[in-house]
Length: 240
Ligand SMILES: Nc1ncnc2c1ncn2[C@@H]1O[C@H](COP(=O)(O)OP(=O)(O)OP(=O)(O)O)[C@@H](O)[C@H]1O
Ligand SMILES: [Mg+2]
Image (cartoon, rainbow, N blue to C red; front, side, top):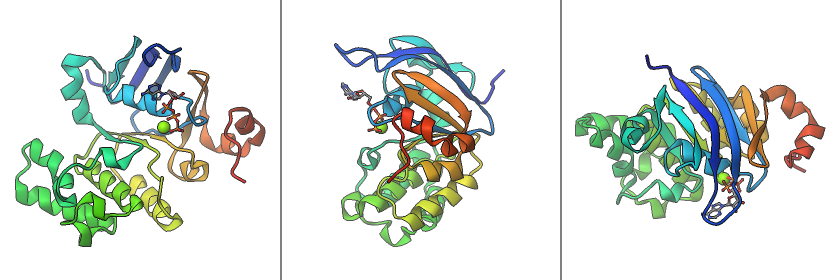
């Protein structure tokens, strides 16, 4: 039976010749959950998300995506379920035009060109980029590139959305709009790494906090955001 969600069991990951960044990570995300991944700069958020996407291989421990054990032979199947946005949007946009970037995934999975283009234009319009469809990513601003990268992920209608710092480079109006877009998506599970605590409070219900290679806290996000002492202790002081 396939169960929707992410399950991580005792995951350990170290970069070459270094102490482990992720020491013993276990958690479960179930269908219907929108979850924040918090932690100080360098605490390992991006490293953890890249492990979930199969871009890095854990030294030990197991990852299950929709009940399927993530390993090299299941990687293509598992990737089909996940939309993943990199911390750096430039890593996501590689085609000559933005429209080709947003249609690339669906066309790869056999969606007819006209349907892929319609869907892409609708997503680009959602993100205020309809006038940029035929431009290359270099001609966009940093925030526009981030929105274009998100459009390219949403075009695949993923079950699971994993976003690494999605509000980087966005002004307050676009941060709000992005929250609204994310809240109306029919996505089953969202996991979002961000330093934008107030924004996370609008979009997610649960928070995982990474510290010293472990999930130090797994809690409802609202009480955590009101607990200044704990945030300070975790290296997440409220912005000043
Ligand atoms: N390619 C790499 N080689 C060696 N060490 C790395 C590499 N990438 C990251 N690290 C180290 O791993 C640790 C975790 O980095 P990571 O990028 O996962 O942190 P993060 O929580 O995403 O930080 P940020 O909030 O700045 O995005 C850091 O100490 C970093 O220096
Ligand atoms: Mg990061």
